[in-house]
Amino acid sequence: MEYEISLATTMAISVLFALSLNMITGFCGQISLGHAAFLGVGAYTSGMLAKAGVPFLLTLPLAMLLAGALGVIVGFASLRVRADFLAITTMGVGFLFVGVVRQQEALGAEMGISAIPDAGMSKLVFMLLTVALAAAAMLLSSYVRRCWMGRVFSAIAEDEDTVRVLGIDVPRFKLTAFALGTALAGLAGGLYAQQLKFIAPDSFGFIESITVLSMVVVGGIGSVIGVTVSAAVLSVLPSWFQVIGDYKLLVYGGLLFLMMRFSPGGMAALVTRIFHPDRRGGK
Image (cartoon, rainbow, N blue to C red):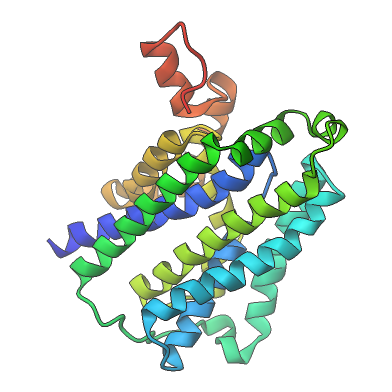
């Protein structure tokens, strides 16, 4: 039973993390290749505060706040660069985060932070908490996608210049997307640190950013249900099949290639084409 609880917790955290990137890349069309840095900000914030004696549940909103604030700062870069240049910029943020953490003895440097204090709840209760937060993120994502703000996000992703001509404050909406997405990533990071009780710089590097991007692309960029299912399945595949764990990057890279080649809309679009050939999307 303990193994199943651990898997369910991992799935919920992965879903939360993937939905956070979907908010930025899927909804607003802002490419981010350094998203794991915000997961790391949340994890280190929560971990350090917990070791300082702050109750776990209080560390989560602080982790979200700090990650979201950093996201707004990084979001300013999206106001001047687009497409490939934005991808390179966000990738640089990811490398910068890992490099800075490795040099800070106060953050454990290369050795990371270990012996993070327990949350004061059983593993079952912690799992239920992570599942509830992941479900809340799903509801929030669905609401954002369908409200007026989500429609503006979609318009910016489709044709940013036209949206500017219409008089809409594009920078404000871009920063909002970054703030929401990175805050959710910070929340996932806080949960991640508590689950493992140990964090290190390499856990938040480029590989993790590509992994979560794979989850979003395979599920269907912009699709809440698709990304949720994709993140849940891909997060536990290495645990179910050892060969996938050994060749994780190869498998995820292959999935990215196949989806972009044969179904750019991901699983959501594929399922829609199969069961509803008269419809498009699947979001």
